[in-house]
Image (spheres, helix red, strand yellow):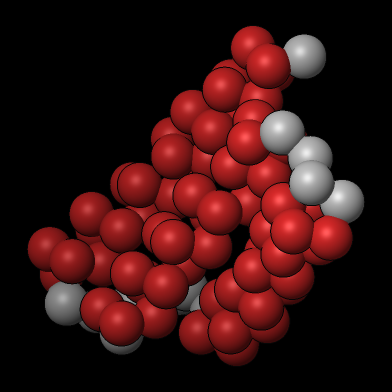
Length: 79
């Protein structure tokens, strides 16, 4: 249950953090698709809204979507 949610949060951080660091250091998105980020961000925020507010799931269920959305927001602002 909860341990898989925490593991999923860690996986989301591991997945997005190298791109955040690379984009910050180089001040260039490289091959990163801005369109992909702009489509994924609202999708992740909708998932958080429905899981957290509408269905009142536990934090570990919707936290990975929130973490991914936050890192996508950072990338969009860096670009």
